[in-house]
Image (cartoon, rainbow, N blue to C red; front, side):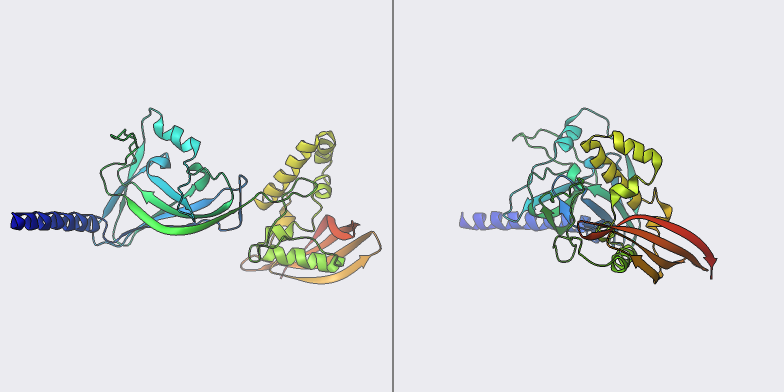
Amino acid sequence: MKLKYINFRFLLLFLLILTCGQVLFANNGVELSIRFYDRRIYFLNSDNILVQVTVTNNSPHPYRFRLAEDRVFSIDFNVRTTTNRSVEAANSLLRRRTQSQQVFFRDIILETGESFSFVENLWDYSNFAQSGAYVVQAVLYPDLYQERQASMGQPIASTSQPLTSNFLSLSIRPRPLSEPGGIPLELHEETNALIVAERIPPDEVINFLLTARQRGQWERFFLYLDLEAMITRDPARARRWTAESAEGRAEMLRRYRQDLQNAEIEGDLYLIPSRFEMERTVYNNNSGTVTVMQYFDMGNFTQLKRYVWYLERKNDIWMVVDYSVTNLGTE
């Protein structure tokens, strides 16, 4: 009787090893990895949290998986707090997965050495109810996610073995304070210190602004721009600004910033100079101008433009309220 018990135990162990071996063999060399698409400081209820998902086939055989048109049927994110509490799924995710609908998909076949990537927004998958630190892991369902009611009433995936990714550390901060115009104050990406304008002379303001543009630091670039003054430079926008409520003006400021970052307006303002030279600075107690020669690398040639930046002193801080540009040809 004892011998039979031992044999039964070894049989179970053998079956377990065999099953695990099959799973490992099925996904051997196929890797699921994630990274932040545009890593920055994330705020509660105010930011997209974009994650790039990559499937890489390092196995000697082709790898096939189905990618749904609605990605929630192909990918999921396991998000937990640092105390290992699971974050609830987003309401939109639950609705999309429980509706009676046809799921459209395409077959992706990766040959050895090939990768396939796509970008998803974590807000579409997880309900971040509060700020804090989180750990994120992705799960890919090669044969799609299938919502079925199991015996315990819990959703289960298809029978194909899912792929799991590496872990990402995510920090979500509370909503930042706002400036009087309704524009969120920014935190420095490296130090997390609140970025505030300082009492520096006009030429240093322009040097700060242009250096920030060269480095792609939008939060610093906007620091010394009087957005209200920049908006009302245009007569049509000025009339709309006058007619808007406080909420409408805050929305105009937000939209102006967004359009500028997306290179949709103010073509000469968002250009990135390869270098610049201060030529002349003139100012009195309340207003001033800074003339700068700015050089733009166009590949086979360099374009020269002379900028005149107009500044006004507001609350003891020099702010850019206007600018003009003269094209000087190429070199």
